[in-house]
Image (cartoon, rainbow, N blue to C red; front, side, top):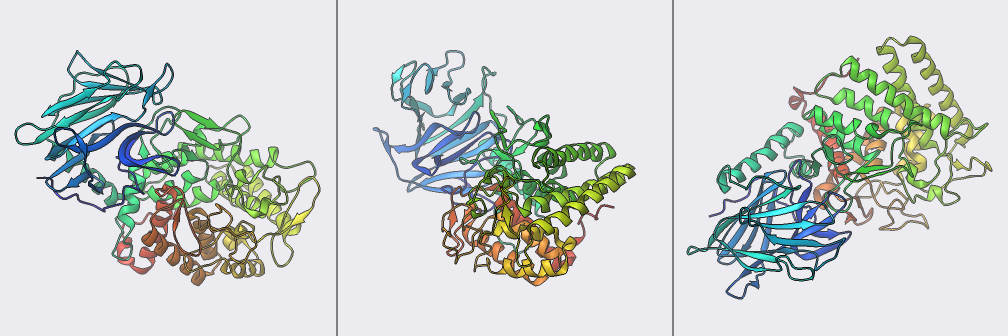
Amino acid sequence: MTDAPTGPAFNIREIPFSSHGSWFDVSPVTSEHVCARDLHLVSHQSGMHPVLRLVPVAGERGERVETQWNAAPGRLVWAAPGGHVELTYQSADTLRLRGTGLDLRICASAERLTPFSGTYFLHDPLDGSYVFTSYETGRRYRITVLAGRAADVRGGESLGAADRGLTLTGGGDGSWEAAIEELDSARLPYVPSDTHERTAERADRAFAEFADAVASWRTPQAPAAELAAYVVWSATVAPAGFLGRPAVLMSKHWMDKVWSWDHCFNALALAPGAPELAWDQFQIMFDHQDESGALPDSVTHSEILYNFVKPPIHGWALRHLRRRLGRPLSRAELTDAYHRLERWTRFWLDSRRAPGQPLPHYQHGNDSGWDNATTFDPGRVRITADLSAFLILQLRELADLAAELDRTGEAAGWADEADTLQAAVIKELWTGEHFRARSPRTGTAATSLSLLDLMPIVLGEHLPADISARLAALVETHLTAHGLATERPDSPHYQADGYWRGPIWAPATVLVEDGLRRAGHVDLADEISARFRALCENSGFAENFDALSGEGLRDRAYTWTASSYLLLAEEHTRRTHPQNDDHRPAPHR
């Protein structure tokens, strides 16, 4: 009898079943916006690739059986009248499966094998296992039958088009067990280290311990906290390929990369309960900083992209991270962070500031993270106020770091540069009513109804009171029943599913909420936080959301959304339940 899964149940059509450290998941989502009829083992090494199709079958002819999928952090169950199959992770690269009254056909997802693509299948004479080798992932997937037998084995050693696979079926009592391993070239024959049930219990505990660490503050007023923790936990991969540290991917759907601002929100959410993993998340993009000081646009297992960058929110993030980390940073860590942040800041001041221009510019909307925001409609190369605002915060963080590291002269220099840049952005881009963006070549200026033009609110306490009040009033015009629309809903350019031209996004929400709160606009910050938290509780952790309906859009298992929920829910809980504040990290000095 299969025990009931513990932990938060979730819809596997939206959130993949996976485990901390694993590079593969089990999901019906096999590519961007494609949801298959059956669950697949989907690898994220060398890209997103469905490798194996997992089909519940029954009867002598092995006919497909319609089942109900029940997913929780430690266990995945196919349930049908008279039978079930259960799957759990033994480790990051090994699955344990068992079935009673229901068989499972495992076959290659690719129908055709060519010299450069597809999946080859063989019955290994060494240990009797069955092995699929994938050109796309460059890995092998070994199936070892532990109880019952393999039936209807087809396509072994076949080339070209073929049905490659086997059926796991039971013996006299209708029960069977097996293991699936993802491996490189070879490994000793698989021998189970424990029973299936104890393996599943360990998987349950592994997640529960993580959730207790990163969301120890949770109360019934944060009902989605445990599921948010699962989204982050399950999207974390072990060091491999270009990722030299444990990495929280944005998703184990098709957004299976780390981008150079997304990682900051995951670091902040993890900081109190998993400080080492949090520090890895902050550092992971700096590991690939280039000679100019720029961070890459994105990094994943087998790809690093430098054709764009992302906004310099890292000074803002580091200040909050140091406050939230469950341990103080050592002097060596502070020194390393200082130099990396210094180089990233100098990139913007030296390589993205045109001659004679006091303010830096983006070369494309992608550089801002708001890829298609209407701010960039008049031209892609734009001087925008948000960029200078982020750099001002980064310069102020550099000044504080330099002072702590006894670099007194450098500290004064960074503080002066921050003051100079702040004066320039107000003089150059503030009209008295709003910030505008302009071309660094022609000087032509324009305003938009994008929330991006209001992002200087992140300066918080550093803003003059009149500018702060005006920005807060404008921010409020973007607030729908569900949160902050990235394009004002009455704009002629508003699109319900327009990426940054309307939908609600987590990072914009967190940055604006924090800036408002630091500027003293507490009631508005509270309302934005409450609406976004309710949005996640009702619609999950999608990449973004329809601002008017609240429907989740695009990738439906996005970690920076889950982390943003955890951040806002934790801060709300600590404000309203101070008795839960015993283990809150002390502010850094």
